[in-house]
Image (tube, rainbow, N blue to C red; front, top):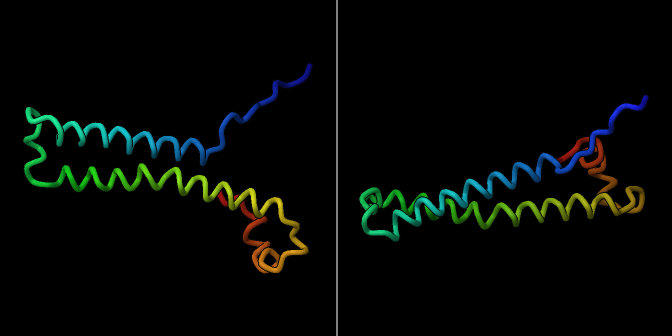
Length: 101
């Protein structure tokens, strides 16, 4: 009898970036509600809510950009032949010996 195959649905980097993006989104909803609705605006009095909101915006925008940039770099370096590329011949041990992400 054959053993059942394990199919990897998502890579760990995809799962991590998804959760980072989700947490940033939830923080944006919560801090945005505090800043927008006057009834629950008491926590926004010190200005810390605006600061947290702006940090979450940076994470929310940067996470997908970093993900796609890293994914492009991994695919780009995997396509190039190692022996014909000067850059890869210098850094090939670092790139090909370890799983970067």
